[in-house]
Image 1 (cartoon, rainbow, N blue to C red):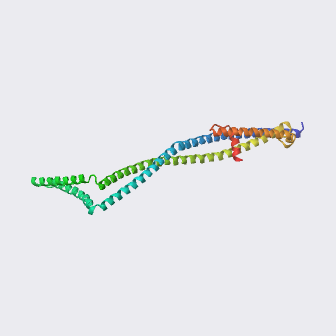
Image 2: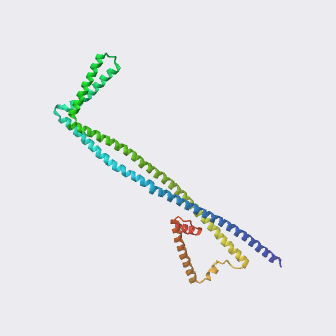
Length: 306
């Protein structure tokens, strides 16, 4: 064998060995990246599941309960307005009765009741704090009895008067109004509590969506890198094939030119049909929350990119 032939043979062997090493390297890197792609897809599916769970809680629990208490608060506010109008009406009626009473007689008697109560309190306090003689204490007790009788006689006389009926009605309306205010505070707090829970849950959902967006960007970059290594792997394999067989790469322009145009078109159409069918299945699986394989995830990502 000549010296020139020996050198050519050695170069071919070295080139073949280097190409083999490159093939192993590119295949390993591509496969590692594909594993990362699967991991990204799994994480994305888990995030979608979390988001769906949180949205379900918001819709079927927090929102329903908030709207329930909001509706009760609204109805109670309408009732509060009715009672306030009734109270204003009763107060106006009471003022009209006092104004039309003969020479203010009823007003003076109403004021005298308070004066009688005050006198009774003062007399009772004297008995408690002063050092009185028996005669003085008995006289005060008699005076108290007299005032109490005057008060009771007046109350009996006025028991069915228009003014006192209005006064009693006013007191009842005020009591009911106070109960309404207490209930309004209680129910409003419940509504606000569920609204706050909704707000907190939406914040968590937004954080998950941001995390999902970042993962999707990483997934796209990872897929691009895996595709790049796959292309490099194919090129190197074609080079190796050329060296080992002394032929051009299988996917060269010369090889492609030998394929009849009609057969190529039919094959492409069949591949596109299969791809569409696989994409439809993948979208259904994603909608149902099922785990996707690598090929299905790539189809969805390519569709989103397009």
